[in-house]
Amino acid sequence: MVEHITEKKFEEEVLKSKMPVVIDFYADWCMPCKMMAPVFESLSSKYKGKMKFFKLNTEEEGNLAMQFGVQSIPTLIVMKDGKIVGKSVGYMNEESLDERLGSFLK
Image (cartoon, rainbow, N blue to C red; front, side, top):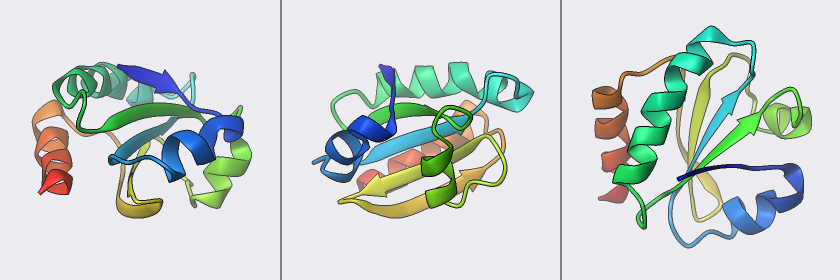
């Protein structure tokens, strides 16, 4: 299940998470972001209990987007133990993203 994350809950939900976290930085007007949404949702079900999935609206949470150097969207950032372990920019199909995310669980 994909949840929306805000700066208010970021430290607790992301930085202190015991499992890897994937954050989809997006905006409502972004067409590639809209294409990414069902892929992200589908994989959130597959990795339930192994990874947390969050969406972060860059227009509402601009400070976090700047903090993570997000310049293009969609940007996916994978964090583990409060540190960035992976980052990808642009649309990815489900197979490619699944393969990429699986590598962070090894």
